[in-house]
Image 1 (tube, rainbow, N blue to C red):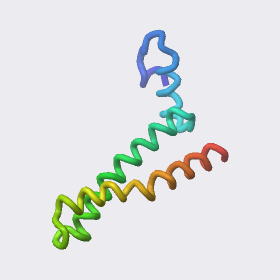
Image 2: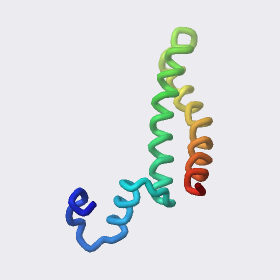
Image 3: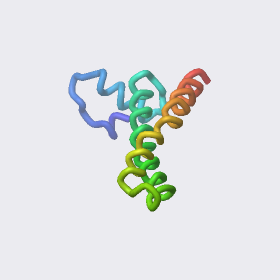
Length: 89
């Protein structure tokens, strides 16, 4: 593990964060990181889905904006519950 990370200096919290992230340990910080990553992906996916579904009807920009707002509405709670269940197992 130290070969991959190299020398991060004396900051042990950053070192432990990267170790936990690489090992797949779900802590509060890594869980928040995965939640942010899932939210960003869901915003992009919601915008693309909105353009595909209603682009011609209400306009491409409005449908992308609405899709990017409604996309994370289902993803963020599901990812949060999934991360909690994975942590408990």
